[in-house]
Image (spheres, rainbow over the protein chains, first blue to last red):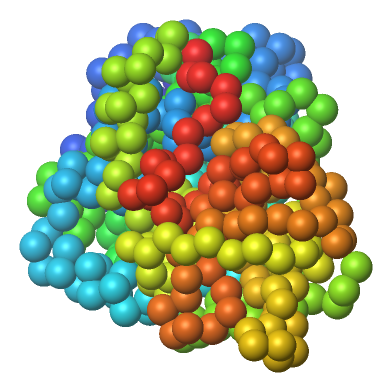
Length: 264
Length: 146
């Protein structure tokens, strides 16, 4: 029953906001039986029953576009149900090349990190799924049944507070606590303290993990924003590297530093 | 899923309005993506890295002036390799004579967003940027989607 308790706990936490509650309760409420029966990876024995996500993965825009579904980047902006005033502010920020957290090499955080063209890997340990992002960012997704941190207790972070549970072969991740300044796309508008994201990670074939996401925030969206992305297995032999944004970032936020590097 | 010609056209249409997010960690607003220019030079340095790869070439000075150093921005290595697996850190070497198509900086400085790189052996590699889209189309994956 642990997963159900976890879901109930975080929904109670968010119950003051009906629109949040609706999104929060959706995945488990639709499929409570699967939730109860599914191995939750709370022990090494249980982890053996979870799908094999070993290897390295990278977001694939091209494979995602082939699905012909909203994919959650600026490419299909017309599919983003943005509030008109938010859309206007965002367009102005993009056009002005406004300095943002990414161009200054701060962590992308959630949700932007899921669009990185870097490699990702997943580690399963009892009670937790950890997503390591090649640029050094780490997503800790707690699957031990704990509720979300109270909004009043949230510390500033880039990854927010992610609580997960397994529904069969699908990892459902519920994230709140987005920090001020994090971008909901990789340019322009920012998320708010009320932004809420539910992601369903499923390995759909040997080489793809599909993530179906629902993002809600009444200040940004007119209705829940639903999108899907595919992450594909990285080419064989391509190990996780150590790309450091500060190493060669030439965007100062207002201009480009065009100082050539030392000659080879 | 086999990639039919029709699918490629749909893909191109879908990405014709591609903005920066899928390619870059920062805005591409400093580049004039409506222009596509060509330049020849010799390779000075290739930075195959993060957050963007940069190719630096030396171009003869105009009217016998000092040689000019030009820099061209592309994407991170994994994104580039998705478009063409030939992108590697040693795809070019210092002194290689290359021809580049690019979208220039709006402020006129000696830099641009890399569209294609023509290698000494004559092969042309598309870079993973939204540069020169009208002329070159959108970068598409070398490996078709499954």
